[in-house]
Amino acid sequence: LKTIFTVCGMENFKVNSLHRTFGWYSKLPLALDAVKKNDCDLHECAYQYIVVEEVKEGAFGLAVKEWWHKWDKKEKKFLPISKPKETLGTINWGIG
Image 1 (tube, rainbow, N blue to C red):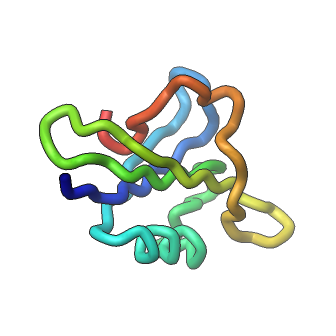
Image 2 (image 1 turned 135 degrees about the vertical axis):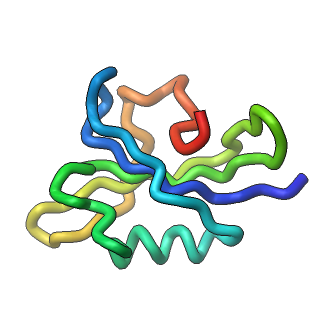
């Protein structure tokens, strides 16, 4: 099956926090490069986390892999991190 790579930002992991899918890419390097460069200001002074998810094609396509990033105030960019413990057991951030 084909997959896409969604780019989703979130303020934190609370139920009512800001959460936004910025878009998707057909290739992983393009999605990761967008996060690395903070394209179009993904951070927006609100989104502390970005997750890139590889999502299978189709209705109710499942995310099969994730790449997590956290905003680093000192570096002023997103840096790769391990999947936060608060998100264990949760997938499909970009496409509910």
